[in-house]
Image 1 (cartoon, rainbow, N blue to C red):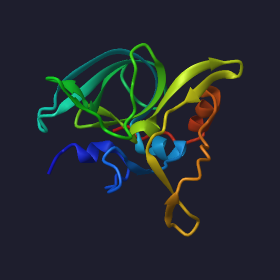
Image 2 (image 1 turned 45 degrees about the horizontal axis):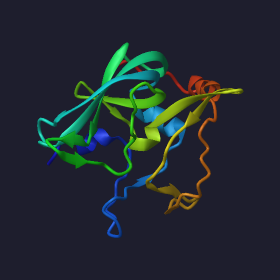
Image 3 (image 1 turned 30 degrees about the vertical axis):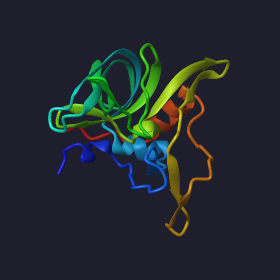
Image 4 (image 1 turned 45 degrees about the vertical axis):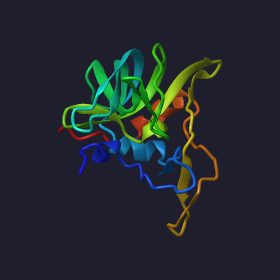
Length: 185
């Protein structure tokens, strides 16, 4: 069994027969993501390169991010985020439902550290680009997955599209400050 799957966090990835380019995931709130993460950070994307994953033999994009501020949990000043996919030896591997971190962007990232490596907690749900606005830095994310949510009865149903994400960095910072502190590991 691959060691990659556990590193994907709490995202429930389901097989979808209708499309090979789709990912189905359960929507996580900012609180759920934060509690499942090692750290929630504001970071600048400073470097990217593609290498061969040592166990899977497939393309893996390694993105270096400079941590500007830790909003929750603990992280060093710089981390390398591992994501399956990228172009290697003329072959492009794309993972549907994963975030596309872009050089030069300033992002809020929910990160998990597993076996010394850093990973997005819940793929594309875990990356917000910060966009300056009159109300402060707005949080913007691209969601391409088929998202599900739990009904009050606990049944998985299609997500209603009501993205309850904090609209600004200030709002998210306040939400995260209200959570219990992460225990040191």
